[in-house]
Image (cartoon, rainbow, N blue to C red; front, side, top):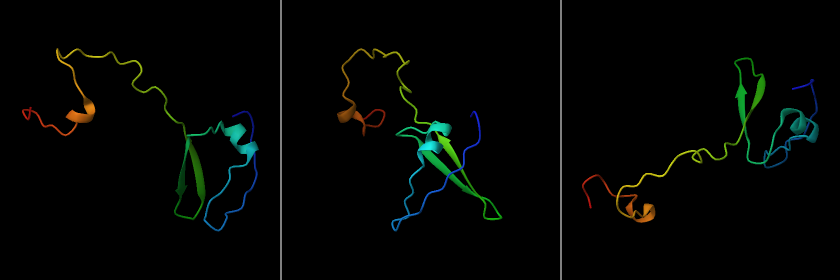
Length: 82
């Protein structure tokens, strides 16, 4: 981060909050990211941005098992239950 930003927001009746635009920009918060909340022993609150992971499997190469597979059909099969 380039500098500190402070802003405030209001907790609404459904306990939702909006992350202020200045905070989103400075912290790099994007749609799909998660906010990890932590309350310490003295009641202090901190928030950490957990970035959304994209393409986690995009670098994996397919494996030829010698026969067609159908994950939707086969997902409950146990080894040997063919």
